[in-house]
Length: 229
Image 1: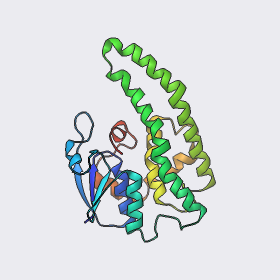
Image 2: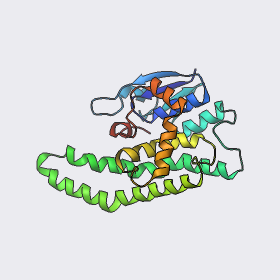
Image 3: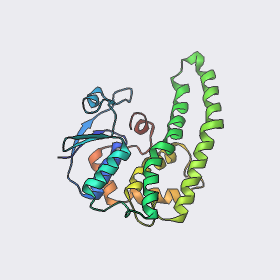
Image 4: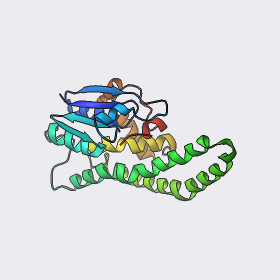
């Protein structure tokens, strides 16, 4: 049976949500974060990088959110949650599937790192580290995030979902960046379309079922972003 190696409070929550949307049977093997919030070493027995999400199915071990979503939709979707070939919607689908981790998450991760650095620095070094972190946030990270959030808002003003008028797996992939932006980048300020989109995905029955099966999930929180692929 298809197995999701599920790290608590992580990106693998998206994989559970996709499987619930598809109605595909699966089992969960759970892994808990260590006190330092990193994934436990047991995950390295499944995949050399020891990160989540990762699935095993029919002798295949698949990591990386986008690759997992592509595999599951192709293998179990029967044409669902993906636009038809050779359509503008399919092109948008492919773009958002790769954009989510390739472009959207790096500045969100940098935001997390620069917010955490001053708190983890030695006490005597904290004022210097805080000044460096603040400079990086103000001049590099926050302007990028503002640009990305404006981009999402503009695209969601054109269509109800990221790939077009229909909900697709690209929306599942995009959930993590928008949840992270809502948690720590001020998405709620001036982005009503993006916030309405978040409300819609959170209300989906499959999303709720995935939460019940996956366990506590702090949407876009520091722990959910710290050690996952």
